[in-house]
Each structure stands twice: as structure tokens, then as C-alpha cells.
Length: 177
Figure (cartoon, rainbow, N blue to C red):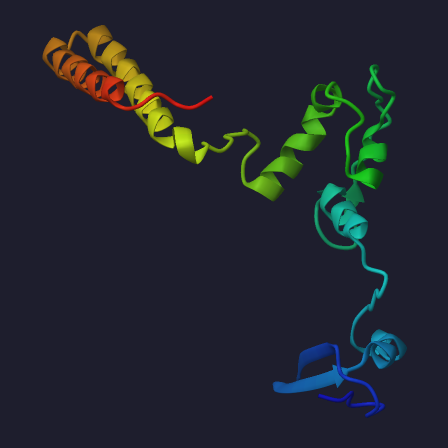
């Protein structure tokens, strides 16, 4: 599809807006989009991954035009990195930075990953054993809970289930390390 303006180059920018309850579409080449960008949007042809990270790392307090960006002048004693350095580069200076900037990093990790706790991945070849071990750990915690409540019949059922799972685990071949 050719550019709606110059009709010379292929359209690489597609804009859809609703004006007076009518959908208006524009298909522009990058040159025309830059030229007419103020009318439709802010066009940033030099978009980089750093600008994306900077947007994610700038913590805003409140929303809208009056929002304030949180900044810290605190520096890591180990490497001398500041949080502002991290915002600019997207990298921490050393492992100590995680502890120094924990308060600023936690909301970012939650926003990007959905959690601030690392759960890791289970390698395919050890997945079965890892799942079994987790199940045994969960059952042992339940066992302690029922013993504490003096529900010994339920505790005995869980004890038997643990023994059965451990027997199955011992029948599986060992992991290759």
C-alpha cells in the first residue's frame, strides 16, 4: 500500500482515529509520518530499547501531567552505581545493588514479571523428580499441621501417602548430572 500523502513510498505507519464518531484511517510512509506527526501523534523514528526501558524504569507517583518521577541519589557502596545510573543503562553495577535498590526494584519487577519472587524453571530432564520432591515437601508441611492440630488419623493418611510417593521416586532412574 502506498503512502496516502506522497503516493511514492510504501506506507509503514498506519493511524486509525475516531473523529466525530467516524473512523479515519491514514497510511503514511515514515517521511510523511515524521512531517505530519504533530497532527496525529508524536513520531519517534529513533526508538530504541533504551527508551523503552527508561519508560518502564521511571516510577511515576500519581498519573497525568502533574506526576512526579521518583529518583534517588543513593549509591551502592560496592560499585558506586546510583539508581539514576540504573535507569539510564537498564543494568545494575553489581550484585550488591539488588539490596541497595530493593525498594525501587520491587515495583518494577512486579510490573514486568508479575511477581518480585524468582521461581526459576525446572529443566526437562529433572522435571519429574523436582515435582515429586515439591509434592513430598508440601505433604510434610501438611503432616506437621495435622499433628499440631492433633488430627492423627488425617496425619497417618498423609504419612502413608508420603511413603508411597517416596517408593515411586526411588523406582525412577537417577538424574544425569
